[in-house]
Length: 112
Image (cartoon, rainbow, N blue to C red; front, side, top):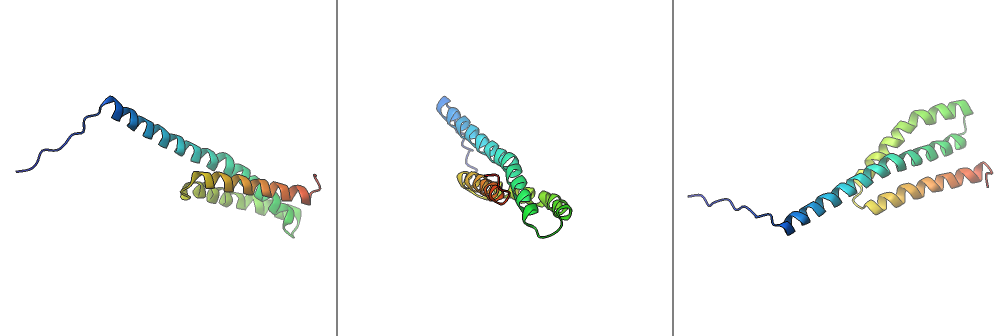
């Protein structure tokens, strides 16, 4: 004889807790997509701008090389945004490194 399956009754409290967990999970996934898309774009554009300024080849070749490699950089940043467990670490690392690249580029180009 098989034991009857237990069904948990969803009271108002349990349903509210489940909705809260689901909405917070959705928010975390949305924030990861946001940093992957917007932060990835900022990181990629800053890194290829710096790389094209630093490469010791002709400017046209450096720009073409950086445009080609930008797709790879963007894909790596997108994967990184979902691979790291801590969302705080993802935000800090992507935005801080993009800001650092822009700062180095500003010093090299005498923008400051």
